[in-house]
Image (cartoon, rainbow, N blue to C red; front, side):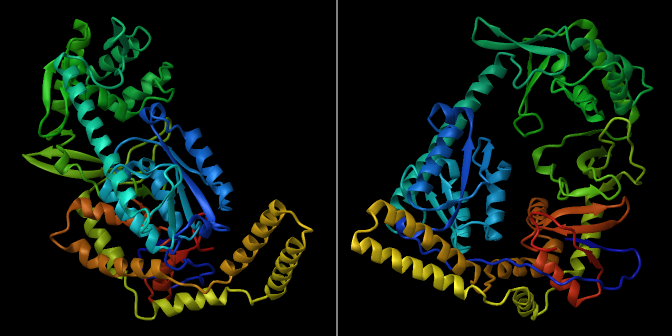
Amino acid sequence: MRIHWPRTNPTLEADTMTRGIVTQKANRITTFEDLRGLRAEGYVRDSTLDQRDGFGPDIQRHNEERFAQSYGLVLGNRWYTEFVSGRRAAKRHEFRQGIEDARLDRFDVLLVDHTSRFGRNQAECIRYKEELRSLGKTVIFVSQGIISGSDRDFLSERINETLDEQYSRNLSRYVSAGLAEKVNHGLHIGPPPLGYKSELVSGKRERKVPDPTTMPALLMALRDYATGELSYIQVADRLNAQGFRLREGGPFKGFNIRDVLDNRFYEGKVVYHQGLPDEQVFEGSHEVPAELKDLWVHCQEIKKSRRVGASGRPCKAYRVYPFSRVLRCSNCGNPYHGEAIYNRGKTDLRLIHERHSLGRSCPIRPRTRTVDSVCEEFGERVLSQVHLDDSWKSRVVAALRDGHEPDDYGAQRDRLSGALERLRKQHLWGDVSDDDYRRDRASLEQQLKAISRDRTPPQLPNLERAAILLNDLPALWSHPGVTSEQREAMIREVYTRISIDGDEIASVEPKPAYAPLFAVMLAQDSLGYCDLESSSTSPLR
């Protein structure tokens, strides 16, 4: 669903919703037998250390498949799978997609192999499990035999959550200590920069040494920029024209050249926690040829002479761009990214639209907007129109009922009920074995539950929560106590995409869980027109 804001006063054009979000009643699963016939999806999370500890993706998936088969669950094929470490869910895109699918009622049960796979942050784990429970979803930790939230497993679940987080915190402390020790010895942390490769010393300690394969690309880039006549993008284009490519195989882009010129590795230094309050700079143990160092230092002078104010990465407290990853160009579709401009002692945060592929340039102007101006325009043009009247729920329910087919499943229910009764009699008479009876009964009961689930009257607890947030958004957005981090979280909670044509916001696309509410707003006010685009994730057509 895309909502457009034309430059002139618009007339309303809105289509009727044809699908809605249906959620089940509160979670009441208390035993594994209660799971029979329910829809399930599996979540798999893995990292290198987890494989060592017996949590490889194949092991997790096999355990979840075996559990679903044992207890008669209807296992789907989505398989939320990701390879990521850390205690925060912000980087776990598949996990967040699973939460989003739960809001859209795409499964009843989420199977997770172990509590540590769900997360290693107890506060976040509790919050997400409470949200799933409020949506009527059940989380099962199959290897531990835990039904999340049940009275029987409450103590075991909390103990495991605590141990999982403690393991992660200990590991983080050991890793940080190891990295600090490497930097103290002048060793570079992370993958080798352009022009260098990794080499083991005595089979253990790793150091960075010049790479004959990529060093020519580095020297050419520095020599070109040192002329003072070429921009980052022009330098990247010349490298690509000569056939040079990044280590991953892709073409060079302007920001790759900028990163080279920002990297003090070429000055012979190693930096620990760059841009943070505890940043430290050490003399590196790696070799930097004299020509390379002189070129890099000269390029710093060229950079400084080109700007009245310098540009770079401010410390973490100032590196917040609420619309990054969401704001996109309406012409070419490429995203905007954040950059800090330092001018007269003041940090100016901007959202910048650059060319992202070789040989193509977007004509949209201006290419940059300050974060403050985009925030102000978003509040005035978009959030000022966000308001739900008291009739929103009745209108959504009416739309759902209008699209609800008459109850024509009575004959099918009678047929299945009769088949189930005949099966019981045959088993009682000894004509059907115990194994055949259990298998056939599970199949019939599953079909009956599917019919009952299809006919469940629509309930909208998810939309209640979404409606409260939407009605509060205008006041929250302009409140002086709301931080940039909170504005960023609000944007990513509600919107999938915000398009801008350079000087004005052109359209917004809400996430599927919020699309019905935006459709109701469009139907009640003449604020714009909506273009309903078919999508596999959107509840609207």
